[in-house]
Image 1 (tube, rainbow, N blue to C red):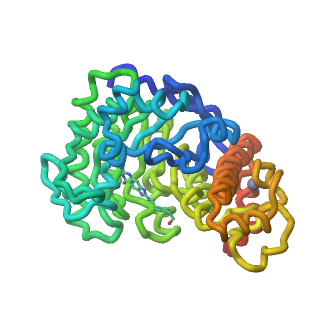
Image 2: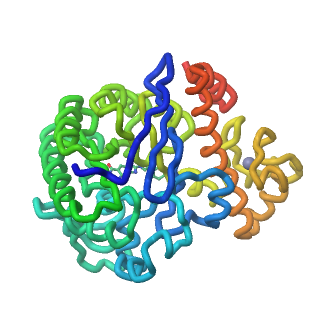
Length: 376
Ligand SMILES: Nc1nc2cc3nc(NCCc4ccc(CCO)cc4)[nH]c3cc2c(=O)[nH]1
Ligand SMILES: [Zn+2]
C-alpha cells in the first residue's frame, strides 16, 4: 500500500507481557497508545462537548458509517466540510465501516458476494452496503482512520460458516482497498475475523497482512463470548500481526478487558459501555461499580470516586447526582458520563505508565483487587 497517512511509532515493549507503549500519528494529530476511544456514534459523544473531551484527555473518537449514512447523510456531512468541521472536533476520528451495525441493528439482511441487502432499523427502507459503498461514505465523512467492510459472525457459528465468512471478508477487504486507493488523506485498517478458530484467524490475518494495511483491527469479539475465550483468541491472534502497526480491538471497554487486551498487545479500544451505563446512573469507580441511583446514596455527600479528579468528582456528591438521575435531569447523566469516560481514559494513562515502569502485571493485580474483580 502506498505511503499511508497513518503511522505507528513503537516506543517500548513491557518487560513481562506483550504490552506496548506507542503513538499513532494522523493528519489530525498524534495520540499515545494504548488508548481508549470514546464512541460518538451520531457525531457526538453523548452529553459531552469537544472541549470537555479534550480536557479529559480523549485523543481520538469513533463515529459510525451506518448511522451517519442514514442520518444526516454522508453527502450532507461532506457539504459541511467533513465530520471534523461538522462536529467541531479537530483531533483524530475513526469510523467503523457499518459491517457490525448492519448485523447488530438492521433487520432481515441478505449477505451476497456483492454486499449486504437489509432494511433500515429506522424506517424499514431497503438498503444495500458493499465494500465500495462503505469506503465512499467514509471518504465523504473524512475520518482519519477508516474500517474495511466486514462480516462479524456470531462467536458460536459452525466452523464451515466462519471459514466461508472469513474468505468473503478478505475478498471484501481487497475490494475496499482498491476502491480507496485514490484518497491518501485517510488510512484504512483491515479487520481480522475467524471467531474462536485459530486456523481461521491465521488465514484472515495472513490475507490482510499480505494487503499491507497501515493498521489491523481484531473483530468478531465482544459479541457474547466469555472473557476467557476473548483472551484466548487474543493470545493466538495478536502474534499473527506485525509489531510495527497498530492493533485495535473493537467494542471492548470493561476495565479488566482493557488491561487484559493491553497485556496481549492491543493498542486501541472503543466501547459504548462508559456512556451507555452512565445514562442509567451506573458508574465505574476505583472501588468497583456504583449504581448511584440506589437508595443507599441518598444522603451520601462523598464524590462518586474519592480517588478521581474529574469535574464531577471535584464538584458534586453522590446524593446530588442520585437526585438528578432520579428526577431524570439531563445534568445527572452529563456528570456520570463525564466521570465514566474520565475513568477509562485515566485507566489507560495509568496503564501506559505501568508499561513505562515494567510493572503492568502488578498494576493489574492492584487495580482488579480494588475494583473487586475476583481474580484468581
Ligand atoms: N466492523 C466491525 N465492527 C465491530 C464492532 C464491534 N463492537 C463489538 N462489541 C460491542 C459490544 C457492546 C455493546 C453494547 C455495550 C453497552 C452495554 O451493554 C457494551 C459492549 N464487537 C464488535 C465487532 C466488530 C467487528 O467485527 N467488525
Ligand atoms: Zn470522577
